[in-house]
Amino acid sequence: QVHLVESGGGLVQAGDSLRLSCEVSTRSFSTLGMGWFRQAPGKDREFVGGISASGSRTRIVDSLHGRFSISRDNAKNTAFLQMRSLKPEDTAVYYCARSSRPYATDEVHLYDSWGQGTQVTVSS
Image 1 (cartoon, rainbow, N blue to C red):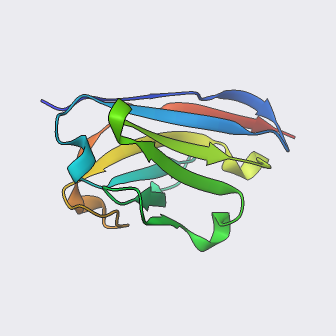
Image 2 (cartoon, rainbow, N blue to C red; image 1 turned 90 degrees about the vertical axis):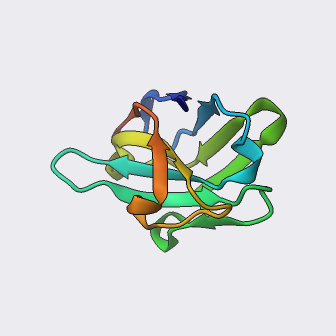
């Protein structure tokens, strides 16, 4: 059974930065893509971005491009979501997920394992 554990969330002020981590307990970490999603109160879960298995390709949704970035350390079975210039509208529970493919995608059904989520709250 694969376990994903997110960490790094918290309460910050607008303009601050946070880096979320997602540690994955699987030997196949380096063969599969990773994705990040978020869910704000009263809203559907949305795709934030993802990274390919090797880390050579990353994707961030257009609305977050320039402020958010994704990386991974395959030696440590960990993926990261770096968030800068945070805004109150970034407040959400952030989830990492393991893709069933060697690439990241915004198709939720292609993710086979999910973390428990970490809360990010941005005050104005």
